[in-house]
Length: 197
Image (cartoon, rainbow, N blue to C red; front, side, top):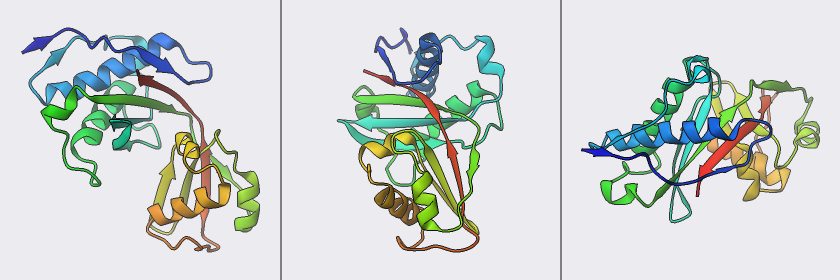
């Protein structure tokens, strides 16, 4: 079964990335998900930037609620392959949700975030770490031993307080909200993001 490229508009919230780039990334993500339902959507997957290494997150929302979110923190394959794989993983392999159904597909919107390289946050303790967090700007990675979790910058919209943000990030990593250790490592990154409207 063949379908025309999805006509949804891209809503850009990036800094200085090209709007056309975002539209292409959203088309690729939607086409990757559609292929699992036997649909073939046209998408422009030959743009030069897609062959460069890239790290992306793909977020799905259904009736304005999170329906899946999977991504890469560091570039380890081409951006084209990264977006395709993360789109399918967000739709069908996010352990928090059942696989996306065909009935949900048309009512699900897609957001693609393109990540910058990570940079370390140097902090001697949690108080110093909290002082360095920039609400609404930074995506944060929390790591301690083999425990690791991240929140995209978009999460600040629902957790605007740095203390609450960090506490929930620790919970996501499987740690207590008040956990701290000398081996804690924090990293920050930024994103350019585009969402279907």
